[in-house]
Length: 184
Image 1 (cartoon, rainbow, N blue to C red):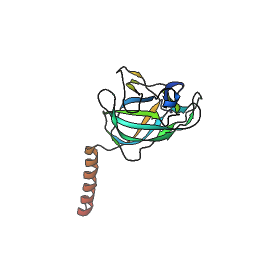
Image 2: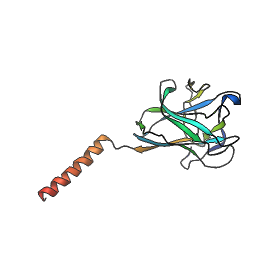
Image 3: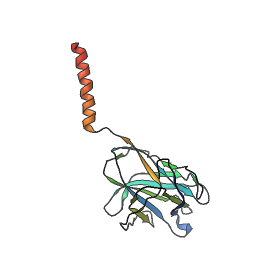
Image 4: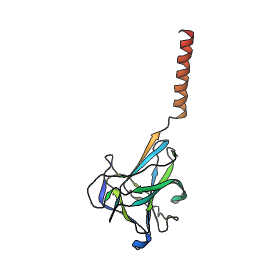
């Protein structure tokens, strides 16, 4: 999705429960550009019939797709109706702090919230190509390794100071305290 939070409101991948013909979940790979705590993930997920919950999780990359173990997961409400030109986003906020490492590969996974779900994870309006994956059971993930257009999502990370920076700040504070004590 672009910086303003817009996504392509006419195209995307279906996220469907088994009562809608076939269970389908989708995943998108990303590489964290900074180290820090995961604050939230903004998602361009829309509903076809009525607002409903869907499942979001973040996992590590296992070398061929998303690992089965989730670092964080939860339910999120669809924000808007499919096909409407809006920039409303569904926002996933992890219940527990998750630390992302710069340069590490992760996956955002979106699964149906119920067997009756019929949602769409909209395509990114602009942006990179990357690995995508699909699951037909919510457990096993399949990726063909071909770069595809990314779905609409944005990972928001609160930066953690690098250890060297934190050490310099600590030394500066210590020097200031010593200077005050000696009157220099």
